[in-house]
Image (cartoon, rainbow, N blue to C red):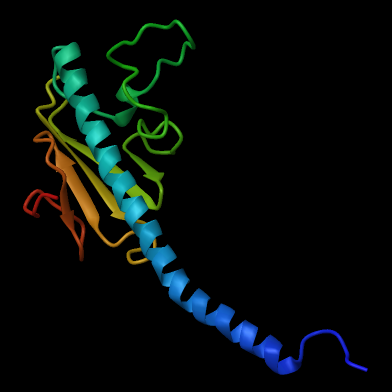
Length: 165
């Protein structure tokens, strides 16, 4: 009488095939996650650049001294935007969910905001986006300033002298 089921050899072959497929797929998955994090970081920098330019032209002043000035007003729905809460970016990009008013984390990147001058005549600003774990959450650092050009560096923190992307 013939027994039903799989032999040990057949099961080992199936497991070996699954392991080979996983060995091919996992590195591609990690690379795609890094690419998605980098795309999110550059999009966030572009959003912050647009918000800063809008803020400077709307309030006829320099740029913001903290990211919180780009946030939603705390009075709730119907509260009009002001120079201290311009309602130009979401709570994550305005840093209202972080302990610092000039830094936040998003999708594996740490964003840091800095200015030159004092409010209301801040003539320049910069934003750095650095991976939390280089090679794991991202492979490049990004930088942008009032020129609205996003620059990258694959080995260190990006600066204004790096090449644009």
